[in-house]
Image (cartoon, rainbow, N blue to C red; front, side):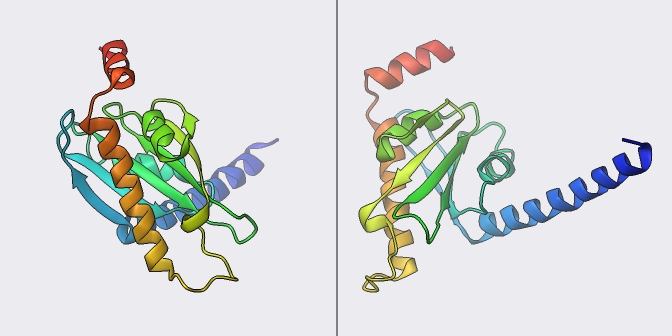
Length: 168
């Protein structure tokens, strides 16, 4: 690998990164942005959006970096016409636990700042059943995800108390 090839790779990588950042910014701009206040945390900055394929980490970082001193969480939804489920990726800053929220949403899993899982049933838009619009399904998912965050952080259970003690 000579310096010319290396420079070409770097330039191509910068172009690809720029495209991904634009896609993620559009997802942020068009997603549900809201603030949740709970018994345990105030002003949780929440983004729920349809995410660019395989870009949960970049999307989450672009979201939670806006709120360095507040709890912030991003839930990116991944649709595929080939799957009978909706994948989701959760990314959060150090003030909120992605894994606990994923467990509440659908018995998902992962790490404290990066987690995910999948949804089935009423959260999937099928070609056969056109009775629900995309907006209806997204509204249902939004309400469901917000309720999951509220459940984790409104009623501190033993799991959350242990998590908070371990992070202190």
